[in-house]
Image (cartoon, rainbow, N blue to C red; front, side, top):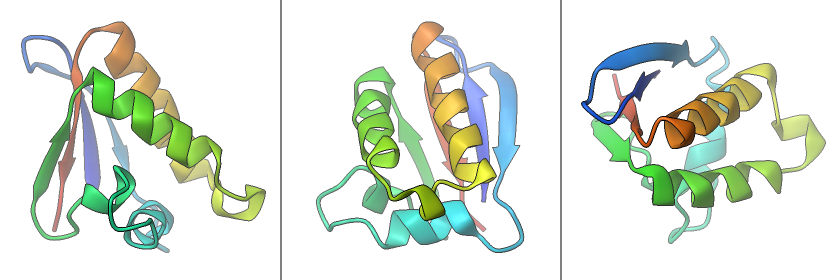
Length: 94
């Protein structure tokens, strides 16, 4: 899973790659059915806007400490950057 930070014009300005253990993807797949993180598709592409990213941040920050891996925290930081730039996170599945 690659996560691209995009600005308002959909220009890519950064990226985060999931770790070999797929800790970010596992957190997404374990999310409640109607959660934002559960909407991230392992095999397809998913794009979240600033409003959706704010919800994703809430969900990720509520995770137990042992699930908030370095990669999960990097996605949180990427979401913060995208929100500040009025942009998006583009999740590119395998």
